[in-house]
Length: 274
Image (tube, rainbow, N blue to C red; front, side):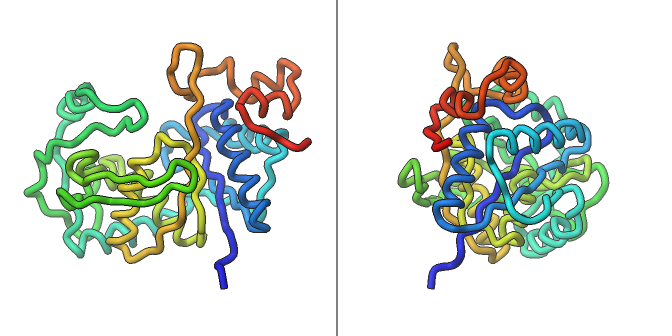
């Protein structure tokens, strides 16, 4: 018997939602509805420096206005730190992590090296690989997950088809726990998707390589891997993918201009049945 469908919305309250979010979240809503499944809402508010309560309110209002509905109370990542710490300790005990002492200057240099716009995390050069990690995260210390160099991570995206990324070539060792004591997006997402029993993740195609990273974490933590449906990215008139800096294309801005939900979804190239 097939497992009941459980999907999720997982916006970060670091800015206003834009047309790209409208397209992705509407797709997530439709896929859950078509599967007679459940859609959950997770507030990815781990970063205390960038998360803002006003944006939480705005994104809930925007999604309700569009007609995107979910079941069960909202889950806040900021309240789930013990779960992430437990996963950290498991990975550290198994030898998957090492401390990273690279300065911000070193990391800025890596960030300035050529890399794909769709994957903003630069390829780490492995400078700190010999360092070992303690089983409990220390203050002011960053930790990286050591990827298995040369291992191909393959999966079939439900929208974009077969995908293949080679660890150590297409992506490298990535931050798992920041020096500010914040679990990474990769770790928190893997832990929460498993805890929420998510069966399909719908999100943007800019996270294809993050999917490969997360599959490695799922294997290391002995967690299930959901299916993935990653949507094409929307771009502005200059060909740049939409980001939260595109205030003119924010859902709230379009609402204030008097557009209807159907008009906004048509702008996002989504067919709807209002």
